[in-house]
Amino acid sequence: MARWEPGTAARLQQAAMELFTSQGFERTTAAEIAAACGVTERTFFRHFTDKRDVLFRGQDEFERVFVDALDTVSPGVTPMKAVMTALRGGASWFDDERRPHSRMRQGVIDANPPLQERERHKLAGLADTLAGALRARGVPEPAATLAAQTGTTVFGVAFGQWIADGETRPLDAIADDVLRELTALTGEA
Image (cartoon, rainbow, N blue to C red; front, side):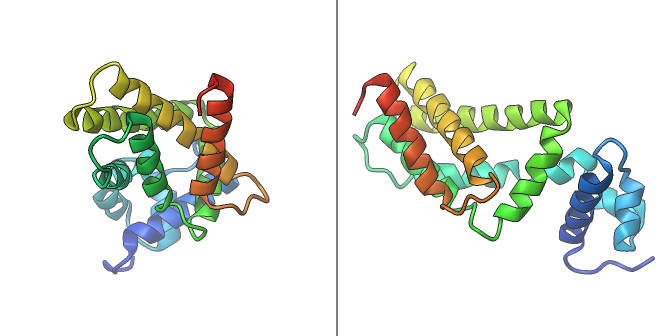
């Protein structure tokens, strides 16, 4: 087996995605993922707590991108506009280079109901984090929770469109379109 090399976690993630896609998440073992990279199963577990972690690692970083963008918003901006600024900032994390990986990852998640539940939990965590950041800015309840959950829904719908086959628009542009659709539905400008 190979000794430790830089980039092992990224190689393990790529191998896992390929195996999950070709043989299914449930039928893929950590040992197979490790073997595909020429490392031991123990090395896999040094990087990931389990094979689900391959798909969901980085939640803190994911949320931090949104909160950092929210932190740039001037005081007095409406909660929904503040959240949309956060979503545009978060969208910057999802550049065109990330789109193929995101499509593959979502395909694995869509094929596995327990992973779908974990993905919903991840988005709920983002909504909770955004609501907390809004409250810290002085936004009262229920406005903080409503804005955060609405913004997270906009993100989820936009993300689904962004990873659709043939889609080439940037995620922030799609999120803006989804928000326009939502405001048309609610009758707000």
